[in-house]
Length: 429
Image (cartoon, rainbow, N blue to C red; front, side):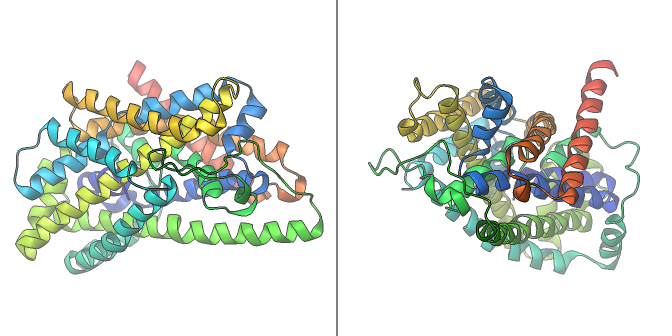
């Protein structure tokens, strides 16, 4: 639950209504399909999607993934939004130093856990278990019949409002779920959680605690015997079910609730058009219609959710970049040093975020949109690459079905068309 769910989609609804709700569901559905194709490769081969893509598309591919991960995500808009909500909750003036302290706290938390993925997973579980029920109860209390009717009508696809900013809309589509290269991290989670052939890969552990696991870059696959294909299909059903419940259903449900909450509280307010101040206005309406402490608690939950998102973003990005660094040259960058590379990239991101904030780039919405548009362009590129990899490098019984190919191709075309148009709009219009 991050900038797409808490900022971009509620921001668009606050200004343009619930008629765009269908696009949020479409966005997260596209990401579900893409994520499953990413997981498919690692489930079969026991290696990350990055190893397969480098083998398929050449030695410059890892450099592209390092660059396309670092540049779009170095803009700490999510954390700046978290800092803004926190300042409003505790009644202090928002400043860049609030964000800087949060960035340092983020790095400190990662330095305390023993297994990096488990630290990330536990943090997110706590946020979801508290955040989703709170948002549900709050929205159920505040939303009226007209709001629910608008939501139901908005789930039916229709033309976009003529005045909607397409860059922000593309950003919201990219962040309807994870977004950007973060989706590719699903491949790494298959390994970290020991799913399928990922069981034999090893995990990244904390370099500060001296614990190590053997990490393998090149995976091990299996013969396509009837017995093994049957086992694969069992794993495939399991991870599809898990991802459908945890990612698609929980994500879509929460996103719809937060859009409905924005509509029920501040839709049509003229002040919604600037920054993420609409979140603070939401809290004000919650105070008016319920109790003062609920408005404060809402802002604190927004703070925690957005902090948790930035936390996961930096962790996933560091994992992606460190693995791609090793792929570039296993002679120069040894696989055994992967945990060290992870923490180097983690703190590089934190340092970049601190520099950006201290230079005065503190407007959360602008930072979020900038990063999201760049991530949407990246998604367009790698969606085609992943689909081509699975259709050519996996054995026929393990390849995506025609329906999955159509869905992934639709996502590729959708992200591509919007990315190209936004680039054209920014340059020529």
